[in-house]
Image (cartoon, rainbow, N blue to C red; front, side):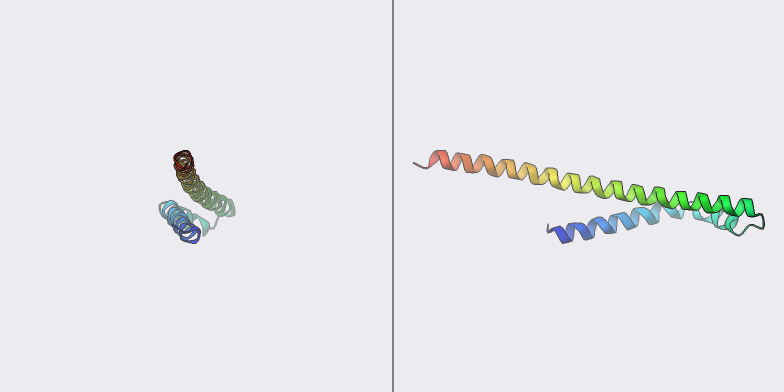
Length: 93
């Protein structure tokens, strides 16, 4: 898989994770954002902001986990290639 394809997939996964995390919590907070009570509205804004930050951070973490997995796979492939090259060198007179 090319780096640009992998990056595109990671961005898509991150966006989906962000959307999925937010959908369940927006309705109650959205109503409170329009509250006539300024303290309720302000606290609802803080809740909404923190919920968004958590979803974004979870998406970043998932993206980084995927990057780590890809690097680990590359490392394993490189190790196997190294072993193959070493065997080839030993077999060549």
